[in-house]
Length: 393
Image (cartoon, rainbow, N blue to C red; front, side, top):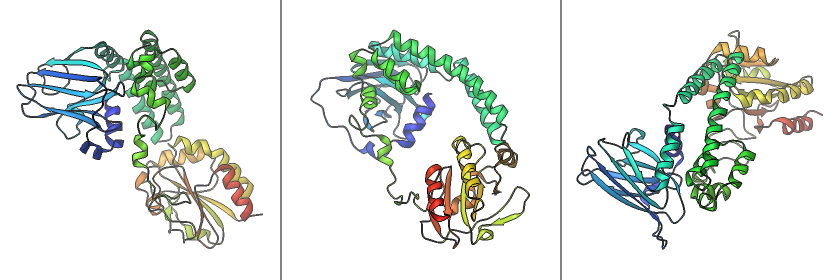
């Protein structure tokens, strides 16, 4: 979990925010972090950063010791504490912090395998980290099942994926039960807010647990952000919204409606080359999918119904798979009885067709007219039916 947390925020957080310190608050609430670590390099920098917003403070190591004071007027949150300014998860540690103090002692050169003490939330965080540790036997079992699941998914073995998914669900449910019990035993802990927002997926359960919490827990920055999205702090996703997408739903770099569709020429399951030009004079839905893509598979019944409704009215579907394994591709077609033409170069996300159409997420689709020009992008379900009904009365 720690690794996933770091990777998520280090890839979505605005690193430019590191150039800005938070404004000084009139509140007196603050956290004081002190460290006496025998092998911590002198003159190195220790950084404390709230990855959601990029707010940070730092200190220079002297005599293998450091002291950081950070404003906590907005309530408790989760931070990264690390040695150095370059984001490196091997040198960093995820920590919950709020108003109070944390003392760190030990002999390491970074923040792993040390002793943490101080305010009550310090020991509470240590308890939770033990429960969610990657070294936890159940967590290791879950990681092994996840690998087996994706290996089976890549070759289209749906029986195996279903088996591994069920086995994983049993472990996940057991882990979630343990964490829910921890929340119930610590109703006024800010750490409960972390567990609630990260590990409890069911929204009804989340709301029910939230109702049992005390005011101190509810005033954590974590829970206030959850209850008031975009008001307490701006969403990190908003910092990365791509407003270069066109009004027709095309991503930047994608072909636009009204222009000639890029050429496609790829082999089918028998190795025969199939070109988009082969369908000139017809309405063509180029459907980008993959046998391992759950949302793609979930949408197939509706797509099959659309195909059956319009296939005799000058309408065809050309499935372009982003599979990398032929076995999985072919099994997916057969398993779900997708009775239209299918092509793929088996390059996964490196698919030449996907590159030509700017496809960066699937499912995705392009509706092309008899003249070879793009009519619409990413229509599905009722929207696709309605459009085809207009074009093919």
